[in-house]
Length: 424
Ligand code: SF4
Image (cartoon, rainbow, N blue to C red; front, top):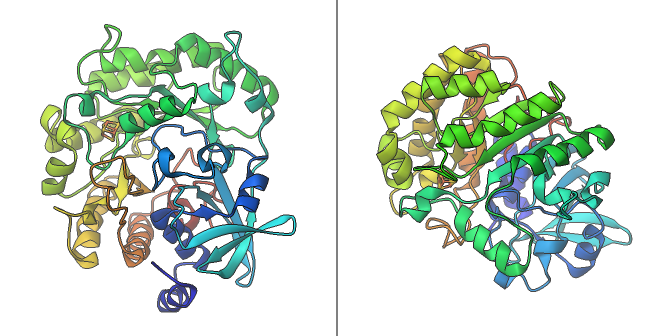
């Protein structure tokens, strides 16, 4: 576990990566804890919605202060002794983390092992979070926002058929998170109806000016769901939204790699950006850690489909996600930062040389997932090196800033589950 002098030494050794970004990545890989007083303040702001996975490093059953219903979705670090420019960080609860938010009179302070790092700001609860649908269901359950309000996150299917079939990705806790949320009383349902999603967005459109994009997503449908194939299930959402509110938001879909014909259906429905998430570049680790994707689609076919999707959407509108750091997860992961970054750098070069710009989610070792039980993420050094290679490979191929994430750059970016937008 880090302390502030170690972070300062790392920052001095890596002057091209901003200090606030190094701290952000360290918080994402270690999680964050809250004093009871800070938690009481946070409870009055926009709370964590558990929009798809737990993204926590502790199960709800071990959160003694009810952090799961009081902690905010995100924090914004600013000012302090290092004069941080604002960076938005997703809140991953871990009561054992050395990063802790404490209250200082009426403001909040981020501390690392007791040393103050920066001030902490919270996002006000959007007005629509307090509204309900005609069914009585809260809108915040149907269409929560992340990225400081920029992105509406529409998890249409809260489960995934791969884990049910014993083929779930080993870093993923989607089904386990569903179970713990239901047990804790959160009004989760496995499937959100198209009608309730459209009703929620109708209300949001009338009262909210912050959201600029939405993502339709959910677990993979390996067989069928409600008698529908994966594309036929998911395509109904953007179709209905764009029919009702054409062009109101940048429309995105994060669904596994589809055939070219299915991708065309997404495009015809009005989707503008497609995320066929790749997760891990290394072939051996893709097979081992993504068994469902490997068996039912296959890595080579997955790559072909990403390239085909670029023909349909345009290269700049196909953005596959990588789970950054999971390639170092034991037992099969790389044993050195050099090997792990070299592997992912190869994947970045492969896609970027073809005009496709991947993005990252910093791996959160969720204890309800197979790989997260030890709660040990990749070393901080790995993330620093990855951000550098990402930035430099983008520059090498002269790629524009990724679409659909808001403004890029330190102090302006809002993407909260990794720092790729802070360093573009
Ligand atoms: S495909 Fe893998 S990462 Fe995606 S929801 Fe299913 S198990 Fe999780």
